[in-house]
Each structure stands twice: as structure tokens, then as C-alpha cells.
Amino acid sequence: AQTVTQSQPEMSVQEAETVTLSCTYDTSESNYYLFWYKQPPSRQMILVIRQEAYKQQNATENRFSVNFQKAAKSFSLKISDSQLGDTAMYFCAFLPFSGTYKYIFGTGTRLKVLA
Amino acid sequence: GAGVSQSPRYKVAKRGQDVALRCDPISGHVSLFWYQQALGQGPEFLTYFQNEAQLDKSGLPSDRFFAERPEGSVSTLKIQRTQQEDSAVYLCASSLARTGAPYGYTFGSGTRLTVV
Image (cartoon, rainbow over all chains, first blue to last red; front, side, top):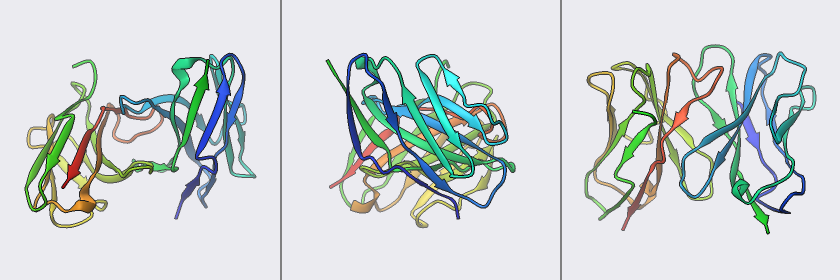
């Protein structure tokens, strides 16, 4: 069975600084997708960034980038130039490639950006 | 609509009461999913619809939980004889594709159910 582990329940960062959120996962699948979702107090899960496991290049979306280490089964999220609006819960999620639809989510990291 | 709409936003139910939670997905989205998010946890899969067909209900925790999508658009998650352990946020998501790959789902803002 696949599992996703986020070992940092809470983190804080000063505005304009950089922070890295960690995620590890366990799977026997060779092809899969990994996602980071943001959940602000509004509760809506918002896609931040995604990575296909067959791509070696790390995904980047503006201030958000990932460090994907397939052999180590690690998928960390780096947020550069942190903004107050980045304050939220962040969830790492795994989705098998083979036509399935069930996300496996981690337990989340609560990030607080300090002014 | 422009996004996935869920109602009510909050629901307080007395233990034993039946509740119905509504999800209005993005127009034209084929797939619809329900997830349950307990306090301090990540969302967990409940059920999956492709159009009006419920293809997977393996995540429903008991036979008190029932979901339907009769016309392939709006979906209702019904919980009968609510128990305190049913207290959670219920998230609905939809997708244009038949699965969540590769672009992920669009989630609604959820219904927070509190059973007292």
C-alpha cells in the first residue's frame, strides 16, 4: 500500500525568506504523479505544483519548486520569497499513474508566514 | 459554474439525525470525487463517479453513507443516523478527465459537519 509522510506538523518563516517542506512516500509503483496542494482557511484545496515521476527535471511554478528524488522517494516543496498569503496547510499527495483516481494524502504541514 | 460549489458550508447535526451534503461540480466535468477530512488529517477517499455511474465506493466507512449523482452533474452525499465519528470536513472534487491525472482535481471548499 502507498503511504505519504509529512514529518513537519508546523513550520514558520519570515516574509521574503525561503522555506522547504518535506514529504516522503512509499510505493512499489514505477510511474506515478506527485502533487503539493495548499489549503487556506477557506478550506479549498488549491493545486500548487505537480511532478510526473518519469520526468527527471524538477517542476517549478513561479516561487514554488520541488526537489524530487525518486530513488529516495522524497518530494520536498521549496517556497521562495514567502508571502503572507502563503500561510496555509500544505498537503503532499501521491497518485498512481495506472488509471486510478485515489489520491493518497499526507497529514499536512501548517505553514505560517510571519510579517 | 466557475468552480466546484458545496453546500451547506457548515452543518451541525444531532447524533442520530440524517444529513445530506450537496456538490455542484464544474460544468462538463466527467469525474466527481468525495473525500473525508478529519481534523488534523489529510483528505481520505470516499467514492468516485464517472458521469452518473458510481465506479468506486470502497472508501465509504459504513452502510450509513450513501452517495448519488443521478444525472451526471450534481451529487449528494447522504449520511444516515449520524455518529460523532462522522464529524469531519467533506470535500468534493471534479475533473474533466476520467482520472485525477495528470492535472489533478478541482476541489470545492467543503462542508464541515459537526455531530453533537
